[in-house]
Amino acid sequence: MQGIGLKKGDMVRVIAGKEKGKSGKILKVVSGKNCIVVEKLNFVKRHQKPDAHGMGGIVEKEAPIDASNAMLICNKCAASVRVGSKLLAEGKKVRVCRKCNEILSA
Image (cartoon, rainbow, N blue to C red; front, side, top):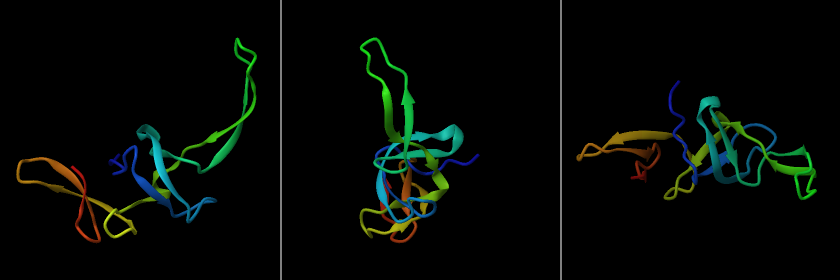
């Protein structure tokens, strides 16, 4: 399976599903399932069993969405872009924006 090109802390825009058009920061990348957890998106309710302090009940938290349903937002062009990769002169591999060829991460 190919890498998804997204990292924790990246800003993404959702392009499909019930959260389409919304954007947020990636909190977690689940690479084995090709999923990401985006801040304040795709909330679900979970029943939490009370712990030793008696805290329990119904909690809302972010659920993972498929990584193919999100696109990275470029800092320079401020648009949803595909992610490419480039090899620098010193042999380091970096992510680049496919629209403006700006380096996204060093």
